[in-house]
Every structure is written in structure tokens, then in C-alpha cells.
Length: 112
Image 1 (cartoon, rainbow, N blue to C red):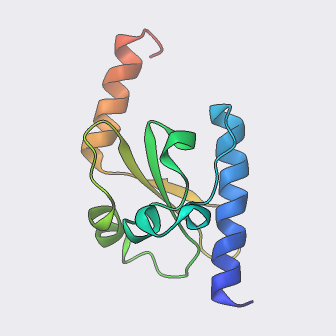
Image 2 (cartoon, one colour):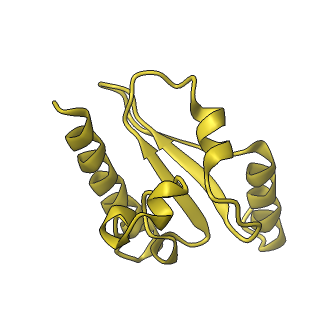
């Protein structure tokens, strides 16, 4: 499959599943100009708040640190890379500091 098409289809699948979890209908940033796309954000931020989402459907995962570092930086949002290798389920990757912040929020709200 063409890598560009593979990436587009992966973004659409992630948007659908994430939208169901968030109660929104995330749109691909490439439909709305180059700004978010150029800043490493694949799904429109207003549809995925409080997350900024970058989708990667590639075999190597060595680039994940660089991908996170290259994404738009907003202290009010959590950068997440959704990564999928062939014949494996997607994983979500974020900085450890963001992960700890999520845990603190869950604890503060009595969820854990």
C-alpha cells in the first residue's frame, strides 16, 4: 500500500476511535491548511482536547522521541503520538511528565 494512503487511512481510523472515546468527531488537520500539519498535529486540536495527536503507521519506533519533541508545544495540552506497526495494535506514547500529570488529575478527581 502507498505510504501516504496508509497514513491517511490510519489517521481516519484513529480519529473515529478517539472521537468515540471523547464524544467528538475529530477531523484531519490536512483538510484545514498546513499550520497544524506543519506543527506535527494530525487531528484538529479542538476535536481532541486536551490532547494534540500525531499518528504514525510506520515499522520503526525509533523516532518517537523526536516526533514528540517536534510537535506544537502548548502547556495546556498533552502531546500524544499514536504509533502502529504492521500487524500490531496501535499504542499511544506521551512524555512521562504528561503521564504523571494525568495520574495526578485522576487522583485529584477520586478516579484512582
